[in-house]
Image 1 (cartoon, helix red, strand yellow):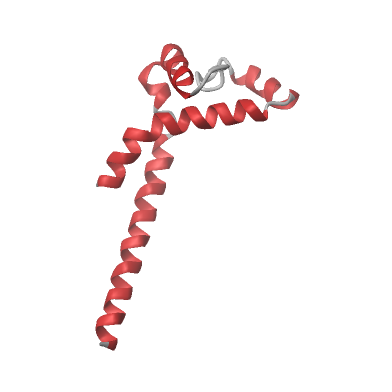
Image 2: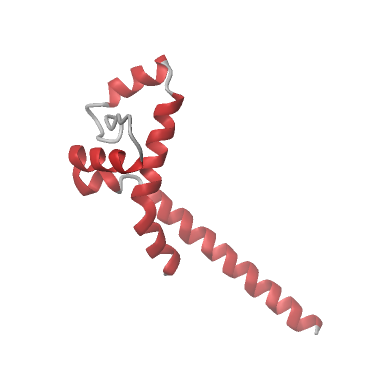
Length: 101
């Protein structure tokens, strides 16, 4: 549960950083794709020359709170699956250590 709460709390910052990284990579092809998608999603139109906070503000201005959490379903799924495998591994190692002791 704590990992899920942490993901929800930090996801908008991670999203803004990802948007900024994609903008840095730039290139003509990405700019064309971005212009084509600009009407579809506020994420693609969040062009910002500043930093993370300015990108977050722009995302919020253009798409509201839902734009700041766009795509979070996949991230939460990843978080839950990763945590599940971690606990499964922990339990299996603990069982093996108990058996060998």
